[in-house]
Image (cartoon, rainbow over the protein chains, first blue to last red):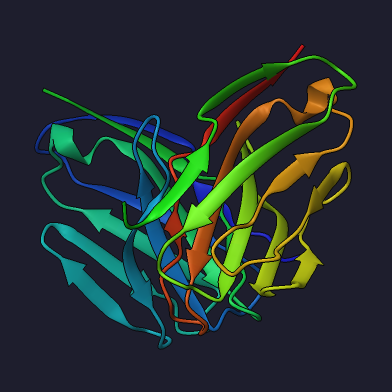
Length: 110
Length: 113
């Protein structure tokens, strides 16, 4: 069974601070996706990274895929209250199946 | 409406009862999935389907049954509900391919008493 461990599990920061969320596995994935989930809703895709070492930026969010395609990170610059939510990484292997990480719950306060 | 919908959104049932959760998507996506989300476990795959009449087990299939007679529908049945099946259930769909986005429904919150 492929496992994806995310850290930290919980993060409470003030507006304007920077943060990094990590997603680690012992397995190699064909691609890795990051989702954000708000209370009462399903996860929504933020980004997909495919190539080892790939870096993608989405406004204040920077995603990186590890060189060996086993790990990934999400960095948020100058966090805002609107960034509050549950962040999930998910690795793709076969048959379009995803293995989801344990999640990082982020709270950004004023 | 276009998209992926789930019904009911909330369900309370008793131990031993049969419960069916419905999922419907309008994109004609070939793949559909059922997940359960519990604190500390993230999202765990219960069953998935690559096409109509093709289903396969995921990580936690015990106690669940699925069917897919039509591409757009993927119902999940709890044959005899147990308290451990209290959870939030999400249905998702995607077009074929490892880089494709999975689109999630809004979830069904199930409480088994």
